[in-house]
Image (tube, rainbow, N blue to C red; front, side):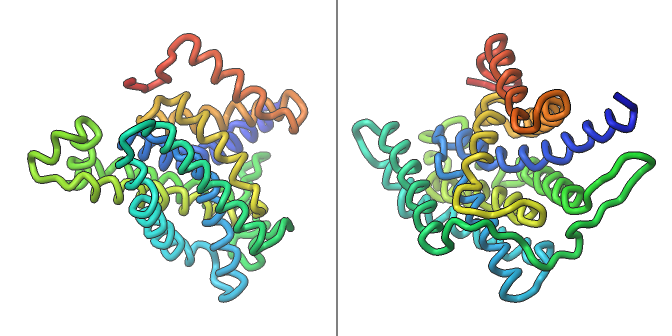
Length: 291
């Protein structure tokens, strides 16, 4: 294996790992705030990708220009999901944990079925893109511009999520995470924080979905694979840890790239699950977990 090949594999893993990290960040944020695993997370990613493809077909705008629109739309959708479904599930007095699981799982089935009804099962892709099918190369290392732009956007979005912790809302978010009942005594509206948390989680996955649509196919089932990777990333990094999601996302991206180089590309996720099992056997809480 030459040095160029090693660098190519490492760079490919890093680019995809940053995207995985942002997809997992929304899931980790919601779990850390409310102890709820959102089983509809992959379907929200799918909706963001479809929104990008449809807006691109209707307006011809590049996905980079659509990014704020899709992110805001997904934020609103996240808030509505909390207000209409999750908030009601939290009010259930018996078997609350199971109710929350069934609500998000049922939402996932509904969204996927609605997408299949509306769009069919055919694959779709962005037709007009500034970066489509373009690459840059440094020596013998080739970098696809769509993946490079997607990873940079995801890195900036991730930095913004981490920067929120320094704001007044971030402090209220952290206080609610630590003790959701006590915050009411100091005037923090718990439901408002929960709703905004769901909005931020959906916006994060919306940004990732928009950038993924620039180089990845879109279908009603596309979210399932990325959701599985997100669950593994969150568990590996530590439930509720944003830093853990970033580190674990990059780690999974690198392991996946190396596995695809060593084994058949169709077996690239074998390495991901192997390292996940090894880490959890040594540290069940994940790399940065607190539970």
